[in-house]
Length: 178
Image: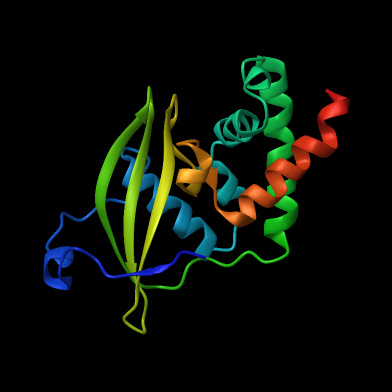
């Protein structure tokens, strides 16, 4: 779960930020599409908003960089990640609560990838910060994962706990079947 924060901008400044359309034309719009799919309780829509190849590759990079360079391993790992995601998600598919959301920054991450920084204001007035890794694909922007970076990860992308728990577990469990 994201930590509560004190935003650097005032609520008035956050509200004055440009609005974002819910579409796959921008990274921020892709995040909104994903959140809307969760609220509709549609696993197919959620999966259509995500890019499991990227999630699988990031998970492989965090385990063994050599594996991440093999296209067949990436494809197989993406399928495993998607299956695990579907299983974990269908048991409790619930979208984020309606709250104030503000996209405060977009940072280049790598060719075709950006990090979208979102601030959410919950109904109780608390603020949380989320980082979304979003990929530009042939069919528009698609979400990969929320993540955090820490000094202990030496700059590597570290998915949030739920995604990290099943992605690295799947890799370790299924590695011998590749």
